[in-house]
Image 1: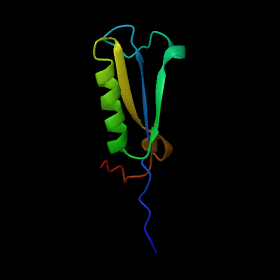
Image 2: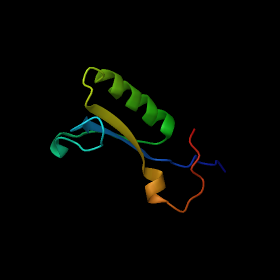
Image 3: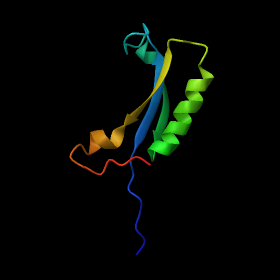
Length: 81
C-alpha cells in the first residue's frame, strides 16, 4: 500500500499596506489572493515571485499563511519541507 504524503496547506496572499510599521491593508477589496498550495516549498516559490514582481512598491507585501496549523492546531507534525 502506498503512503500518501500529508497535505500541509499554505495560503499565499498580499496587498498594499497603510504604513510600513504595521500589517493593516489599505483596501481589503483589493487583496491579491494568489492561491492555496500543498506544501511550504511551492507556496514559498510563488510568494517569492509575487514579492519580486512588486518590489518597486514599498507598501506592497505578500504573506504565507500556514493553513494546516489553523486547521489542525493540535497536530504536532508541523514539519516544513
